[in-house]
Image (cartoon, rainbow, N blue to C red):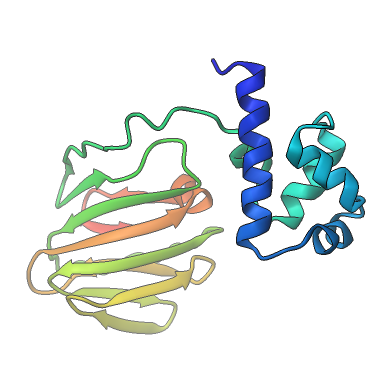
Length: 193
């Protein structure tokens, strides 16, 4: 568990760094937060106590959520050791940690002749085909995504993904809404949500 002083220092450094990265002056950030420039300066330099009534508008104006701003977990173990998880005609490897805002997975799909069942859910998906070809069904559209190509789509559009002719490997990234909604059709090797 992090000490209060460690959290305090990390939050102050992040606030200043985010403001500078976004190219905002104290006056510009103050206008976005309805805080005074001197209040923001005192928070950044440690001359004012950090409180939620100050952090919430600062986080919103700096385009970061409070969890990320307050997170002081150690990043000592940054290497992920993916292990294959096979089920039916698909294999997946988790490529991201369990607590991130997005989920990355490597997927190997085996081809099948069965029709894909399209699903919808809140969220956003992105995929990159490493090897092979996949059929991306988006509503009434059928799109072939080749090796080296990527696709990005809103998951409120009915969608399904299947390998074409030979096994296909892809990297998929989706937000936590997508993670909660994604299930795998183990009977036909198609990735669906």
